[in-house]
Image (spheres, rainbow, N blue to C red):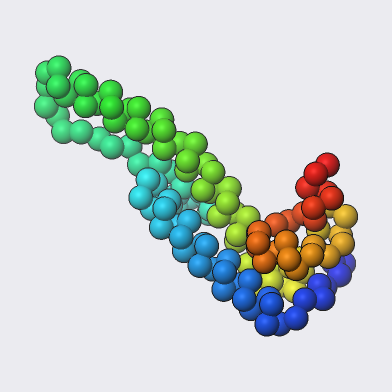
Length: 129
């Protein structure tokens, strides 16, 4: 059984508000380059900028640019998805009353760390390892 954290309600409310705002920002950024995968919760699919059916050299160059842009979007999408997953996990932990416990050693993560990095799942010592 997971031990509950000892943070005061005002601090948790403030952190939860910060996390929900961060979630909105990440989802907004993701929506510019990807669409949610309806079959896999939490997964997004990069949008591929399809061109029209023109032909000729200019169209081939434009299509090459679109492929390059798509390749650039993939790592950005992955980074945003990873951050969003951490933010969602932190929000879930607040709801369960287990927020702020190090996932490795089980000790409380200092409130100062959580105020700066609210999605932190590890204390500083475990993060260094």
